[in-house]
Length: 423
Image (cartoon, rainbow, N blue to C red; front, top):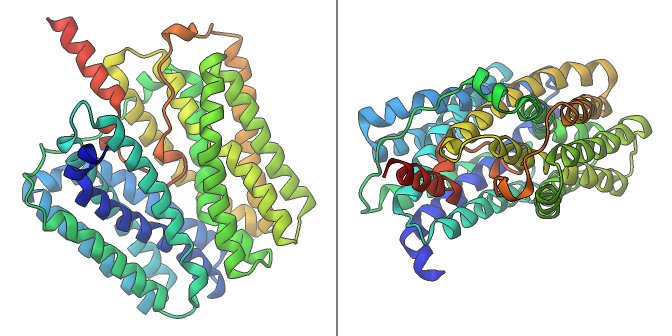
C-alpha cells in the first residue's frame, strides 16, 4: 500500500487541506450570516451561487487549464479562493458574499479537476483502487475536520476566515512545488440529458431530487440548527454526524442493492429519510440530542441514495459508457443542488426553520413513489450482470467533478473492454 501511495502523497496532502478549507468555509458562512441577520433566502442563495459556479466551472475550467497550464491554473484558482474567503471575513455584505461564493464555486471546480486529473495520471492499474479509496476518505475527513474547527473560535470574528485562508494556502504548496510532469489536458464535461433519461429514468429523476434534498440540507442545515437554538458546538456536531452516518450506511445499503432490485432499496431509503424529516418538521424538537439523533437517521438514509442511483444507471449502460453516464449524473446532481437551497430558503421563511425538512421530505417521497412505479414498468438487471456498487464521494462531501471518475477502477475496466472489442 505504501508503494502505491508514495507517488501521490503530496497531491493527496494538498487535497486534504483543500477540503479542510471547503468544510470550514461551508459551515462558517451560514452561521455568520445567521448571526448577521441575513434572510433565509439570502443564506440559501449562498449554496445556490456556489453550486452554480461549480457546475459552470466543470464546463469552463478545462479551457482555462489548456491555455495557461495546470500549475499556473491551479495556483490562480487557489489564490482566488484564498482571496475570496479573506474578503468575505473583511466585508460582511450579503451581495458581496453571493458574488464571492459563486467565484469560489467556479475555482473549486478548477482546483478539484486539476488534482483529480493529476492523481489519475500518476495512478497505475494496480494502485488505482487504493488511490481512489484514499481520495474518497480524504474528501470525507477533510470536510468533517474543517467543520469541527468551528467550535474552537468565535464566528463573529475574522479568526476562522483567516484560518480558512491559511488552509487554502497550504493546499497550494504540494502541487505547485511538485516536480511531476503535468497531466494530459482536462476533458470538457458533457451533459446529455436525453441520453441519461433514456438509459435510466429513475436514476435521472432520482439524482435530480437527491441533489435538491442534499443541496437544501447541506446549505441550510446550519441555519436551521442556529434558529432552533443549538449552540455553535452542537451545530458542528449535527452537521458532522450527518456525514458520518451517511458514510457508514453506504456499505450495508450497497451490499443490499447488489442482492435485490436497487429501486426497492432506493424506495426504502428514501421513505426512511422522508419519515425522519417529517418527524423533525412535525415534532419540532428543541433538545440538541433529540435533533442530532433524528438528523443522524436522516443522514444515514439520505446520503446513501446517490451511489445506489448511479449504480442502477450503470446497470443499464454499456461498460464503455461508465464515465459518460456517471459524469452526466454528477452534473445533474449539481443542477439539483442549485435548485434545493433556492427553494429551501423561502420555505423556511414562510413556515419556520423546521420546514427545511419538509423540502427534503417531499423530494424523498417523490423518489419513493417514482422508484416503485418504475420497478413495475421495467425488469431489473440480473444480479450477475449488474455494475459493481462503489462508494461515491459526492454523497457525503461537496461535489466532485467528472474528472474524478477517471480514478474509479471501473473506468479502467471500461477502457479495457473497449480495447478488447477493437482488437
